[in-house]
Length: 420
Image (cartoon, rainbow, N blue to C red; front, side, top):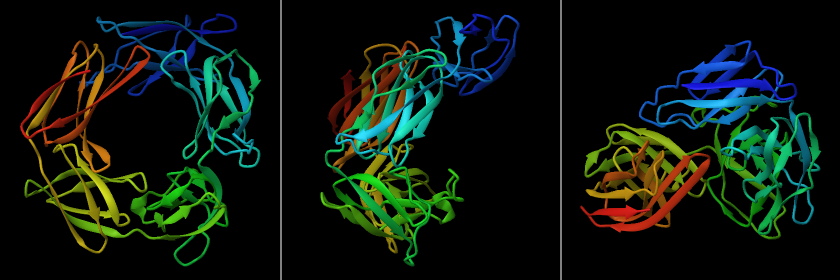
């Protein structure tokens, strides 16, 4: 049972009409005293929700941390609703050059809840304005997915505040700004193209400017907008996705012309212990940083993607491998299951997730996992192949995120106990 009371911050008067919501629950409330009472959603074998959001028309939503007692109850107390605050500023690199970045206002007084979605800073001068932020303790972050992240200090925002920050500085050492013109297979500009890995848009001429680390780029996925000016994109299953030809960025690179090509069709058969597989398999392409989720039936698979190296995992069967796949060929993938197992001793109670990441070449891939909730401080993963593993355990409880890893080697049939 969740209970609480909603008040206006300025006057302490009750809010009589509001909405209480969580991932699986949304309830409209009308109460002259601003009070609410609601049953917890079914756990379905998982933990109870740890955050509820209160939404009032004309005010920014407020997220409240919820600590469920052993009796299954939680009183959220008085929840204060205040007028929105605004934060503005500019994003630059360490040399003062304006940058495009994703700007977030992150609430730091509970469980790092996002107080407002990201705002993309302006192309020309790097300026940004984040509005509709709920009062409270907030930190502003500016992130560039290829160059890094900069953070403001911790801000205490009062209702109606309008604050201008000093420049947020992202260190771009090892990166260079590159003007890239994307062209279609027939040589015409890829107008309004979207590069998903960079979260960057091309203009009408197919050109975009982006800070890129020095190095080689392969298998970069590019898709087209549904319509100019919209933010929805046609999925790769529609046949609108393309892949960029390989290119390199050098310290002196400032402009590139990159041709796109349609994806190849990679087909083949996956067998586990010599038998055709029927299950969901994740094909991860390290060069492009992209996952392809493929439903394999009677061993047969088909994926529209470029030829190259792929990291495969099937958590349903606890198997994984690093393989080379080629378009236009019948690829045969042989995977081997195992009988090894681990038993994990956890440092405290809480909603733990334990993952077994099999080492495949220079990479690790998750092939099995388990969850523990409530008073349990142990977890086990059974029937995994022999090999080198990274065992990872994470837990988010009481506003604190804990992540622990250990590297181990398992022999066939071996069982190991790991104490975190």
